[in-house]
Length: 245
Ligand code: ARG
Image (cartoon, rainbow, N blue to C red; front, side, top):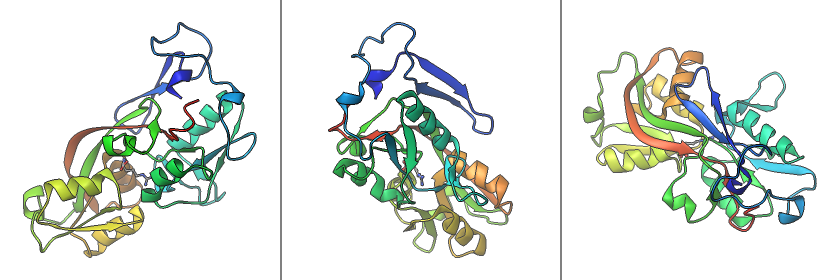
């Protein structure tokens, strides 16, 4: 997909601190140095004709979540992939909700989804399985606890502390590496994890900062971010190594 870029669109995103650089697929402007020709429809095979079939874990507001009224996926990533599909002359078509830790394997395996977009951090490990588009958003991690909690990053590093995360995420990895003594609890659903922090089942959650900020304002007003962790992550769209176009 990076091959298709002709210019970068800079989109600013109201509630998210940071800017978004999207590799656009427009036709004007000069070619980036590494650019080939625009991908033509004959250069790639799609899971379903005329559609860009998208895999995501849809519990990660404000990036991708279900609109309760329409039952349709909504959010920043949803808008982004719809725009990319439109540029390709396709219609974005979402698979049913997938577990986050299955997304990269699903794209790698092929045949089910053309792309995965789910606030997926570009990591060396994932790059062994799939390709990513140019990064479209900068992100960091956050430690979330109850407002009346006395815990700090230091006190959480203890076997008596259950620290929850979404399975297979960079937050999961951060706990393993940085709170090695804590009891790391990977779960599939971020809302369930935050609810568990709220009820005292878990001492803390480690999750992407923009998601923590958004979800705490929307529905978890009794939780707080006690530490912003500058991991310097970047989100990209995962595509199959077999489908560079
Ligand atoms: N950015 C983190 C990662 O790539 C978390 C992404 C979780 N995304 C989701 N839709 N649940 O590991």
